[in-house]
Length: 427
Image (tube, rainbow, N blue to C red; front, side):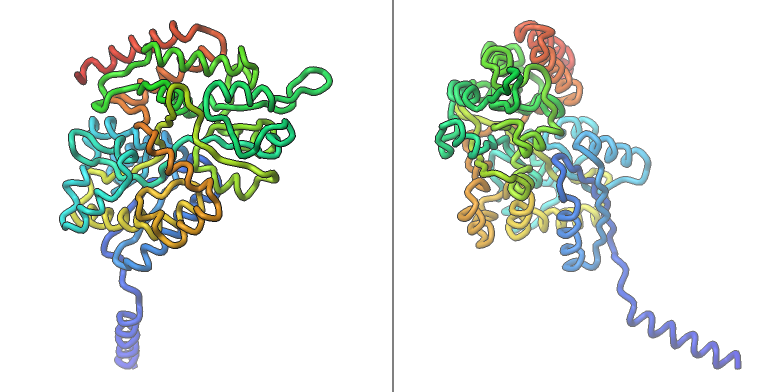
């Protein structure tokens, strides 16, 4: 009797061995930031699920780690804990800090075939500026953006302005903003003409203004900053003047996290924000809206922004190969077109815009092309060694000026001197 039971057990085991799905040979942990809200986690989950279906030997655990700073902190903590991730999407501007920590490996050391090398060269050059150091590629673009100008066309019409002609210069921004600012009978502002956020990523917004004055904030090596350059000072003075002199936006600090809702609730006619908000605005605006390139000072300009893929150095050869396969899948034209349509982030390669779906989407919804078209006027986002410390110096200087605590000259000169001391060791 026991022999028959043993035979039945053996038979059942044999059947299970045939029918049970094969376990994944490689497991990957990927940290991922969510910076603009919306349903991004569901979209990423969908892409990962499609990848796992196509690659049953690879299992991907996507960990949503909050904003970009949270993602960096948690990913680095995991590396130190002995239970590390193999890859992560983090700020494109984290590259110098990650290299200084010896935490990442260049993609040049992971790609092997000609096809992989062609893929590495397939991205928009402007999006690669923050990922390349000393001729090697350490970051590959994925969740990428430029700053764009959203504007309420209905409010333009109400103010007697042409809704198809958003401001294209600083002077026009001040003039149009004044026409769009509305006050109630008590003299209190009900609707502001424009809002530029000055928390969270104020250095990013400021990088747009300085580029519009023909000046970048740092060198490619990440060991020099130009915070007190006269053109940089002029840019910060203009930002402050929009509130204190032209009175087209609130004086003081404007919150990044609530600005999109302010725009959707028609508390401001114009906002500067990430193109990553485009689909959410499209799906939730109850008014006719437009999207345009940022207005020019002496020239057009915006920094690129957003997240790059990085592969961590502690990953094994098999994990690096699997990570590369995942990254290639997620940045492929077929996935990039879906990602761009569903989020508003740009397709990271020209091939993405050649796909039938994204080509048709851009044709029927032209705002989807603005961030891409602005790349010809784009520059790298502020990225240095000791990036967090240096960014905080500039962030604090910006806020001190906008809140009326110091002059642009004083604040930026102080930030520059402190940045020079931090970066002197990297010369």
